[in-house]
Length: 142
Length: 97
Image (cartoon, each protein chain N blue to C red):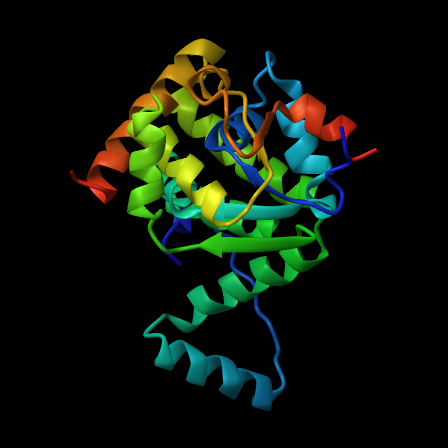
């Protein structure tokens, strides 16, 4: 597997939430976000942005946004996911929310999605991007 | 300031030019001058903080809120399930079929 050092990666909402919760079952989320963010080229699609807003207060969100500005690069996708790609992923068995994210990533040609959501792998076996756990992402930064 | 219970009053001497810039900005943004000064100080401190320091601060706020809401002891699986539910809600709102 290649390094992700020169790749743009998308971070799932659960990585942010587990990192900020300091979730003991997923310690790599904190390491990745708190200690490795400045090494990452981050892509945030609209769906993830709205999910973060829904889970965080205004003040918490501003703090996360300030931190994200320290990433190597950060790209915000404010446009909705392409409808045809979303429908395509739904037809292949993805739930609507996951289909939206898959459509965003495919349209932006993002090759890595960092998530602790195991359902992504089972729902989308033939996705054009690779789903990585935070722990694996850290290894691929070395 | 909005949160006066935890506020400390300080007296700051500023060059007149800086004071006038802050006053103009506060007026333009319809903010109280002291509120804007607080924001500027926080932003200035953040500029010197590491990513970990920034996120530790957010994490502290977030975890304190979760404790108040009785949600910090949720299992990781419960959190993941909740996030999946929120994901579907938002997708339905943003992309009504």
